[in-house]
Amino acid sequence: MFLLQLRNELWKLFGKKRTYIGSAMFLLAQSILILFLKYGRGPSHGIARDMERNGFPVAHYLTNLTVACIALVPIAYFMLPLYASLVGGDLVAKEAEDGTLRMILSRPITRLRLLVLKWVAGVIFSFTLVVTLGLFGALFTGMFYPVTGGLFVVLPPEHIIGAFEGATAWERFIAVHVLMTAEACSMMSLAFMFSCFNVKPAAATILAISFFFISVIMNSLPYFQDWQEWFLVHHLYVWSNFFRDPVPWWKIGESLSILAGYNLTFFIIGAAVFQTRDIKS
Image (cartoon, rainbow, N blue to C red; front, top):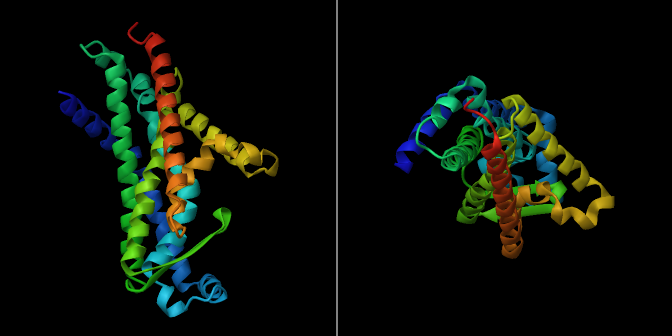
């Protein structure tokens, strides 16, 4: 019965046009970035200079994975939280606004079960969103750049410069996207919590994004450096650790456990508020 109800939630979620806004914008942003990197003399020369400065041959490392990661980073830093929040803010608040939530709760289903179903549907959407980002990035760049060679990555905010070869390059690329699901799920859960409040869907999304940017601002200020471990955004980019060599497994485990705690807290707060709401009257 749970799987049947989950299927219905997924039908509702993926049946909305606004669900695909994130994927469409990812594809558009990646296309623009990749085309400018390919045909813009300035950007392409900048990539070559970075490789030569660090002692890596351009012909070997200027591949589809390298360019896909260059396009991936700004999207993952700014656009992924936005579009994950957009769907998370819709999950409960949109149905309350449309009046369908009252009809659902008139049936023999508990509020907690309904929230679990919607949250699981949101997790599945988050995974789908990240897979779309990774697949299109690798395939589209493969049309303009060689698919054989190494992977060169520079992440200035994380102080990361990495180079990987062959199968290891693909393993790191795939692992980064798997871990990126944790970022999407966390932002979806944050917006989902606000969606359980008596607010409009847009308000739930704006509240989640505001919380995110407050965390970004505080995390970037040197005065709060000793408190960074407490900020959500400090752990959202856990995926960047797979661009380090060797991989700091302890740091990944720490960030994932903290994100799991954040997600559980968001769900508990949202469920507690939702239980007290008067929806049927």
